[in-house]
Image (cartoon, rainbow, N blue to C red):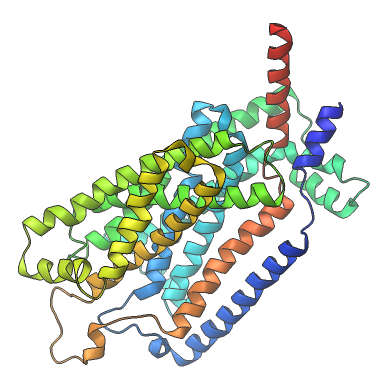
Length: 438
């Protein structure tokens, strides 16, 4: 009983400390500034951005693709770990699901921001065309949000019942909310069987939905018949990149949560070692697809493709391209191959670098290709041949990133980030095994 009380005290949600309050207030401040910039964009129109007839997507779509990619970690990765019943997954899956839900929710918001006017969202439903990948995106993103929410919520039900009792005297209001969310959970055999079956069904559903979402995202580009996007490689290329971005985000958040809540006894070096091996596998796979995407076209290049590739290899976008490839992909592989590189602190640094590189990678996927249209417009201003986001675009984009981090922060504050009931069951099982051996 004493061990269980200690476990509950360790894993129950805790109030923010001083650093947590400053962090949350900083995120809210960034969001407010972004909202002001967005309102100004609504009033004045897209002229406040640097998007023109060439760069008609820009940073907003880059950010959208990044959010969609990051959300992948909470779908396929977590679902596979759940279905295969790997015990080492227990302290990690809920954090992954929180990241996934926050990222896909902000992907939906980012699309509306890119439309310039929110009322245009209605047109996607009224004038939907099944021939358009955008219509598929409109269908699949809400579906993915719902399934991601259910994958997070269903495993939480037993923990909500535990927290209802835990906070009954300490915080009656919070206890009441946990009680409502627990759906009258009693822990009966029927309830447990129903919950396990539901989680398994949701996990099976989210794998194809996640793969479809990444593939549709790729098709949005490859069906536009533009140099740099006209490739059958785009589907698996996006999926491999999503694994890298998602696992990098998971490593970063897991390290911060572990340190902030002193969970070293539950999230151990062993877990970082496992995540490191998973990340190096993802990076190697993505590197392979990058070779297919850039090296092979360099040998069979047309005149138009030559201009695009030269822009990336030695032109104006070459510093970002080589930084993303070498620092954000090759270096992590080299470091993660060694056990010392898979320790918590090195893993955190590598994860952070991978996430930043993943964001800039999406910027490279979107922007250079738009500046080299298949049918160039005659007599356009020279400024159209170049694009860098305006201050409005940066402020709005930073606000969406801050909002995703705020969602993660608030969920981490009020949800048990490590499953209480499952951890208790596994520790009891472990203790029984030790007793039997003794």
